[in-house]
Length: 315
Image (cartoon, rainbow, N blue to C red; front, top):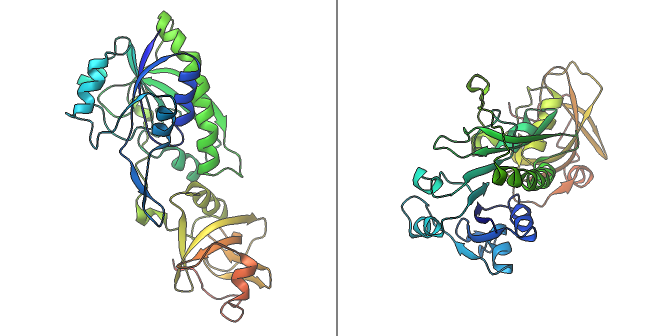
């Protein structure tokens, strides 16, 4: 039986681990991030990957930092045929990579060499890409730079956000891994080096990057909102209040108003101007300190606060 040490943390990784177990791979251990406080009550919570491992009585290793840790020594001691990583979230030392008898491979949620780094799904949606996908690569010391063993793409629909794409890519990655592992075991692969001239990066989103720039086109504003939904979420400064944007609709109508102004203010409708003379209907938002609300509920509380033609979004 082919043995594996699996390394991953978020929801994306859990179905991939589950599939390896169901297909009778011998998962010797799972390496995942330590339990973290979650929610307003800061309840210490196991990662989705740890929860799968515990359900199947698999040894769990949780180093704060993998390099030089006891957990790394344990993973090396297990001497697996494969190390398989999927959104683990830490750099892996070369010594650990070399401990895999056959290969150390990574299930990466982009069409490499595009979007190396920690937030490839966010960037694909934010940049309004037509498609994205999963690449299975050999792991090397340099981040996401190994030769591509296999790759599959899927379209990004105009209704997709980061949450829906993570779900789709998790299934795609699971299926592609199950296709690829037997070929690796048989030596029936033809890896392709990444074209360094085409490399782009997708670093983890910083808080300052969560603000939406309404001088962009309506299409790109919508893409940015979907690219940060449901996490970490996007915001604007609306009439002086930091306000999360949850759902918008790009309208075909054009306006001569400069970006960030009220185009339409009705009882159940708020339309704002964007760059490129675009218009954007706001459907759901969340002012700071308040729950998420529909535009109707929001406008009920701000009847006199917004007037057509008024600059309401800080640029």
